Image (cartoon, rainbow, N blue to C red):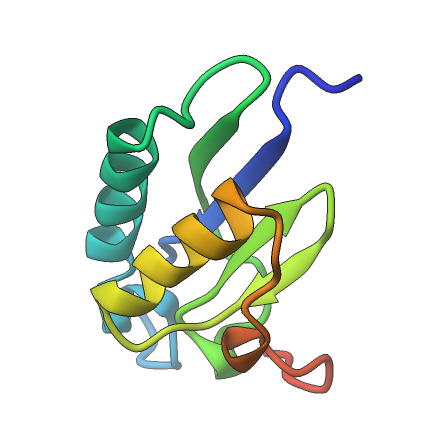
Length: 108
């Protein structure tokens, strides 16, 4: 068994050349909110959920993006209520939030 049940990586990359990047969409705020909600719900830590920062995940066109492992589910969101739904539905209850899943065709 894995140390964590689920591991979430938030892209916080900011491109200097003006290309689309997750940081343009307050990815840091979403990361902070997710980490806070995971802690509030008692999901953080061993056998629970780990929320991590990441550099470019190379799916910039769909930004902001985060990926949840071990399921390898890629998400994009609009606001904090979407993050709450991901935390409560996927991270806590194990149910993928289909409406927020990033289409596989979306890349850089």
